[in-house]
Length: 219
Image (cartoon, rainbow, N blue to C red):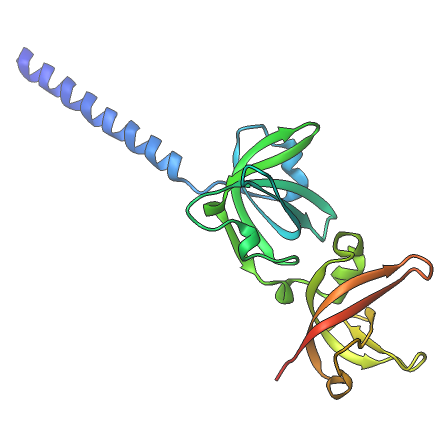
């Protein structure tokens, strides 16, 4: 009788050990929470999280790591992510300004600001810039994109006052002046287009302009 009780206790103990091991494994493989960029400073260091943001800048360190500046354009919040090399290429090889990235990493601190520490295997492009940036978002966050080459979709229209061209938002009454440069845009007037262009801000006139290098007309 005693041997059977001992066997039962050992069996129960083994089962509990297996269950605890399974719980630990499940917990370690659980998907980290998706949080807003604006709340990153409130998260405890060492916590693994996921964030989604628009890439507004990328720079390289001598070590091979890359610094990614991501923004939540709706809340004007910005965070830096530091990506070390993994198996996949580093983000600078495939991501461009205006792309929406999903990053999983650990919250840390650099001086007085919060940082997401990650590697290239945990950086994913969710949407390309032409599906992310609108004329409205570019105007509202122009300081993040000034001097950058971006891709933005809108309707190419003629400005009745200046007789120049403007790129108008698809849904709202926002528009940016477009300088023709070396591209003939006349045949695209009235069409929905995706412009690859450099965003410039004239501080004397407080005017934004797009200087296009490529145009795609939606069919």
